[in-house]
Length: 529
Image (cartoon, rainbow, N blue to C red):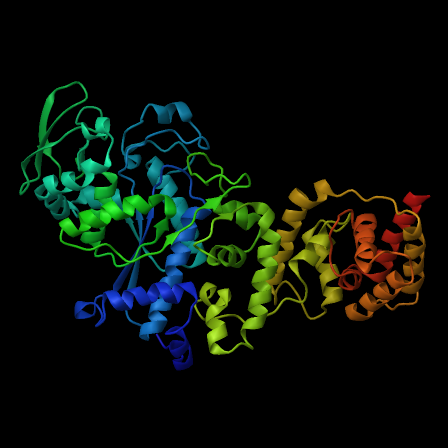
C-alpha cells in the first residue's frame, strides 16, 4: 500500500476519531507485532435476529480504524475478523421472523443447530442470518474474514483455548461470581455443556474432571449425571468468557462495542488476562435509537434493516451517517435519509480543494479509504425529491428527461451514481413524500404575487440559468407585502408543491421547466378561484 507522505504526516496529529483510535494500536505494539504478524481487528455479531444497521455499523467503523492504522504505519499488515457467535443458545424467538412456533420448539439450542425458518436453502437459522450479513458486506466491498463460532467449536479449532478455560475455571469463577446475583451464582459456570439428550445449551454448574483432556461432568436436564468432553462442539463458553477466550485464541488487537457492553468488556478483559492474553484496544460507542428514542434491538425488530436504508438512500449516505459522532447517541430512521444523502455529496464536493489535515477530518476520506471520487452531482437529492413528487414525474425514466434538460451532459450510462439517486428519490417520494403532500390555495397578496411571477416567467427562455431565475423569484417577492422573503418562499412551497419546505425555486423551475412551472402556478390560481 502506497501512502501519500502528506497524508501520513497529517494522520499523526489528526483529531479525526479513526486516527485517535489507530494511535492506540501504535502504543499497544510500539515496534509492530512480532514476526510482522497482522494487526487483528474483530467485530462480533449475534445471529439471533436479522442483521440491521447497528451490525453493519461495527464493521464499517472498525474498517475505518483499520484503514487509519494502515495510513499511520505506511501500510502495515492488518486483518479484520467478522465473528458470528452462532453457538449461542436461542433465548427467545425474535418478533420479526417466520415460523414462530417451530422456532419456539428449539429454544435453548445453538443457533447453528436450529432449522432455517426462511424460504432459503441455508442449513440453519444462523446460517441464513450469517449469509445475509456476508452478502451485504460483500456487496459493500469490505475486506474481512468471516469466522463462525460453530466452525471453531465443532472443528476443534477452539479445543486448546477451551482446555485453557478449564485449567483456569476457578480463577474465572473468582472474577465472575462477585458480579452476579445470588441465584445466578448457584448455576453459573464458565463452560456451558450441550445436553446429549435435548441438544440445548445448559446453564448448569460444571465439574472439571480433567482439563488436559477436556472432560467435564454435569447434571442433564432430567437430573442424570453426565460425563462428556467439552471439546468438538459439545460445549461452549459463557458469554463473557467466550469473548475473552476468543480474543486470546484469535489474537485480537482491536474491537469496539456499544455502551451497553461496557461492564462485559471490563470482566472479559480480566478473564483474558487470566487466560494469558490481554484485552484488545477499542472504542465504546453510543447506541442507535429508533424514532421513539428506544434502543435498537434485533429481537424487537425496531431498527432498520440494511435493505430498508438502501431502498431509499445510497450506501455512501449510510456510511456518512454512521461515521459521525460515534460517542453520541443518535436516532436512526428513514426520515434521516435525504439529509444524509445531500450532506455526503456536499462533503465530497469540498474534498478535492481541502488541505491534507482538513481532508482527514472529512468523513468522505474514511468512507472511501482515501480514494474519493471526483465526480460531482449537477443537482441535490432534495431537489430530485421535489421533482419526482410531482404528478406525472413519479417515474425514473420521465425524471431523467427533466434532469437531462437541466444537465444536458448527464446520462444513465455515464452517471451511474446520479442514475441510482434518481431511482432512490422515486422510491422515497412515493413512500414518504407524496402521501403527505397537500397543496393549499393561495390567499390575499399571495395571489397577486403568483400572477406577477407567472408574468415574469412568461418572458423567460426555457434554457435560462437557475441563478437568473432565482433572482426573478426574489425580485417578485420583494414587490409584494410579505413580512419576509421566507414567507414568500413558504407560500410557493405550500401552493405549488404541497409542502412547508422546498428547494431553491430557481433550481426547481430550471429543472422542472418554465412552462411546467407556469402550469403549477395556473393550477394554484385556479384553486384560489
